[in-house]
Length: 268
Image (cartoon, rainbow, N blue to C red; front, side):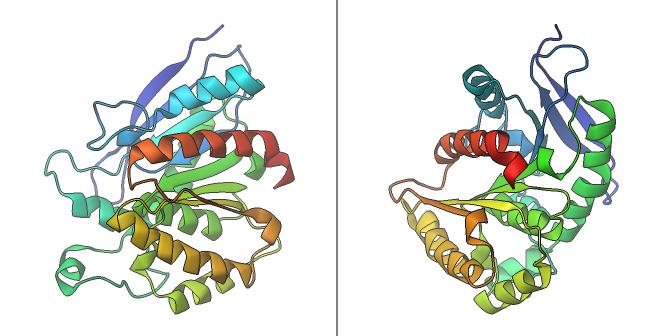
C-alpha cells in the first residue's frame, strides 16, 4: 500500500520563473490509476496556512469521496500567487484570457492587468498535463480529466475546458468572473468553440456580498447565452443566494463537483 502524499513541483513557465504545482495522490495499491482534476490557485487547494483567504481542502474532499463511493482522484493545483511581491494583479493577469475579447475594466486596472490567460492555458495543456501523466498514477484521456477554479479561476476553468473539449469532460466553474467580457464577446467566443463533444459544466454562484452578487448577475447572463447553443444535459447551474465570495463557499461545492465528475464521467 502506498500512502497518500502531496508532491510539490516547480515547472518552467514562459515568463522564465518556475511555477509551483502541487499534486495530491491518494492512498493506493501499486499499479492503481486515478482520474485527475486540474485546478487554478494551487496555493489555496490543500493548506489553510498558504491561502491568503482560505482553503478548499481538496485532498480531504478526495479522501471523503473515496471512502463514500470508492472513487479516488488525483488533484493538481497550479499556483497563481505572487508571494514575493504580494501583487494580486499578477493572478488576475494569469487568469484573464486575451482571446475572448476586449476586457471590461476601469482604465487604471487595464493599465496594470495584462491578459495572459492564454499563456497559462498553454502551460497547463502542454507542460503540466504531460508531466503529471508521465510521473503520477493518472488515468489518461478525456473522460478521466476535469478542470476546476473559482472567481478568476472560474473564468479560466470555463475558458480552458471549452478551448480543449477533447481533453476535459467536466469543468467546475465556480463564481466565474465573466463580467470581464461583454455578453456579445462571450457569445461569439462560445459559438466558435462549439463541437459535437463539449464538457459538462458545473456552474455555481452565490449572491451573498457585493462582488458575488455582481458575479451572480453575470453568470445568469452567461447561462442564458449557453442555453442558445450548448447541450442542456451538459449544463448544471447551482445557485445559493446567501453564499459569499469565499473559499468557505467553494469548498462544499467542490465536493459535489468531484462526486459528479467521478461517478458520471463516462457519460460526459
